[in-house]
Image (cartoon, rainbow, N blue to C red):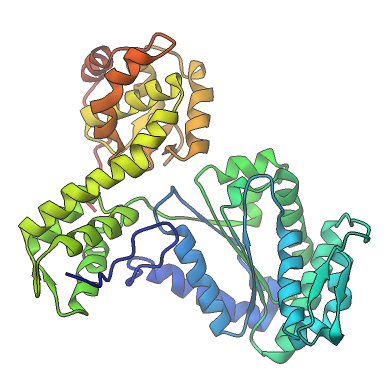
Length: 427
């Protein structure tokens, strides 16, 4: 069948944003409160979760909801070694001033405190240059940044009652430490010095964001930010709806066996739901039903794509000690039947103290291969990683430059552990 309704790929908005309605509702309520009462009602939000759970999509949805209420948005995409919040504001100022946006024009004097702004042709689309080559570079302090944001928000709200200014930061965990510290301090200054400012903040980040913020010198990030965990798995009814509803809108039905097959194979992981459903759709002859046989063909194709595009490239890049720790996690979770393993379980399987592999754990968390769903626990970001590792570990071990523990030894130690009490109930 042609014209698939599914949208695999990073950052692509699915046709049905299932399981996130409560977050959207809470966000809309907060935006309305800020529009009326300012920062006193703000909850600076970080959407925290592993890759592939839809954080960027939800952040974009937050932006859409804000703009529908009259907010203007400064969107920032964090990337290692590049600019941060001040550069993002300058770039947006260049865009808005070149469009001759009234609120931004009135706030131009405040914006110039973040760096020299030069507007040609009286601002009528003639172009804007921020920080030209002959202008001195400006070091921005948190108070100045807060004053600028408050001024801009006031001007925006004067044109759009109930609106304000939203700042979004995607991939927050890769921002430079000084920029994270500046962002946090500016938000705090807004709370103290501009309690009536209609300024909202939302970000997306990997699960290690709390550690990243503390390492950047942000004190008590849990008091400044509301961290909203985004689970790896959708609840089964939500995952079911995300698959069958887009097809129903095209007058196509999924068989119950086909849907169940897809939900089980993907572990209801949002990124894989879209990919597996898309491949099934493209291979199904149709025209009005997707059968179990269609789902089986689609899953086989999708699993091959996941391995060749995602799992194998990362597996080949992983260092030897990283490979061994990934194998220990795969063995432990497979033998216990749990979605995660405890630090003690992994140490027993490796026959090594936790401090001996703590640096490797941090490396894998930073890479996004694993995450900590709770204190003293580790889990795979991609649910289908474990069987891939178990199939490929011994080949990697044979090529390793250091001695790695055989899979058979790890499996024997895992089986000798007490029966797992952490098996998770089907949600």
